[in-house]
Length: 325
Image 1 (tube, rainbow, N blue to C red):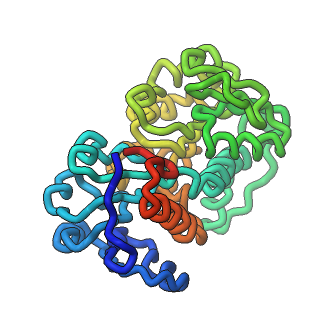
Image 2 (tube, rainbow, N blue to C red):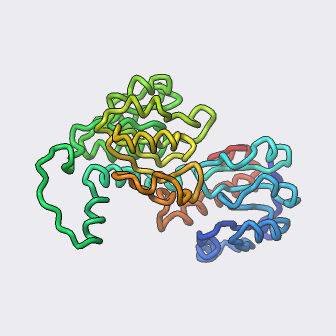
Image 3 (cartoon, rainbow, N blue to C red):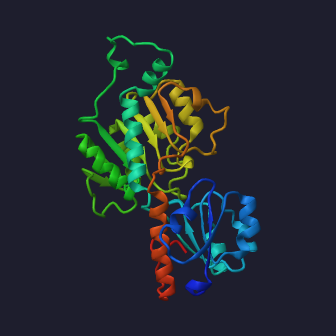
């Protein structure tokens, strides 16, 4: 399948995101490409008919294909692409590429930040700061801050993000076990890599279970009551993957019962996380609003991918970088 793009001088790009400054960043490159920016689904639906190329993530709905007669290429702003119907895009002759790798470093750093926040009890420290309370020394070992040296991290999804997280974890002298679809691929910084079939066997060994996998039929609901029940009482779960990878009800019940030590959650099944969710108020649960991939360099990283793929399409090449459709 080969998208036929207009010539550079005839091409129009639509940047569709509620916050990112893609229009400002591409203007600094002086590419000569025509573009416009929208900030809402309503604006996107009204103006998408003008676009040959679309950069989008959360504002996308597959129904928009029906109002996009010129659209030939979507460069996803996000690494995850579960919001797109590959079948419908292919039928409409629209190519799709992901932004995989654009925020790998940022997400990996966010994951280790959540690990450190749990280990060093930073939530408690922040709460005490707000109350102007100076906590005394603690005699109870189970309630003290801890170290990462010698701990085991199980990384579920040993791709670009998981691979980078493994490097960081090794810098803290942790043992790293990776899980990936192709367990025979290069293990990178991990001490060992296993297939998904080994997950339940490996979970009891982990002090930290870090989820960095893509959302697929195989990974949806991957961490449920059974897997949480296999974790050590002293262990913690960190999710920077997708909310649907975890059974949130089971996680809340597990945390309420004190069956695991902590959780760091950057992604939830429903975003924003509903105000009534019990996860908000549970002790030693850290919630960040899907900001794991946020970085000052993100727009430029995505634009690099866009320009690479536009060049390939103009040259008549079949393969795209991070090709999905």
